[in-house]
Image (cartoon, rainbow, N blue to C red; front, side, top):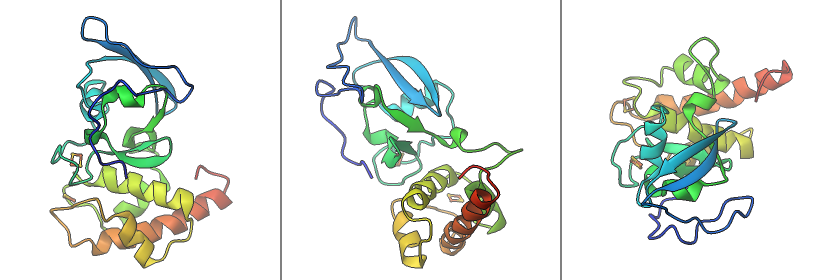
Length: 188
Ligand code: FES
Ligand code: FES
């Protein structure tokens, strides 16, 4: 998981090679693909991606420790789990971000979200967006994880409510549900 806070934005390049970003009047114009849609954002050089996403309404990206320790701010950045509190917003320019809002809705939950509910893994829910996205990243790489892989996938995601047992069960149940959905021709 991306965890080191970068010191400058001067090296930031978009995925499409858009070059070094420049700040005008202390503001940088960036475009980030968030949940499948290109989103134009104006950010400051020191603004973190977590804060920019929340300002844009993606409140499922939770601000826990704001220090790279808890995993509640986890997003997928170009398909990999990353801590949005440890990235400058400008570092996401030209890249793909997925937040929990991009996975499912209460009416039509993603199989991973359904698995977390069915497994009884959700108490207050604050840590769950990060855990669900960590699970998504795991299953995208390993559709049939064992318990050890499930535990490793969640090892950067802290929960103050549970003992993690149900959440590991939820990851394993997620694998089954994702495969079932794929067999039915639904989304992965
Ligand atoms: S808020 Fe980012 S790791 Fe805790
Ligand atoms: S369910 Fe409350 S912090 Fe995890």
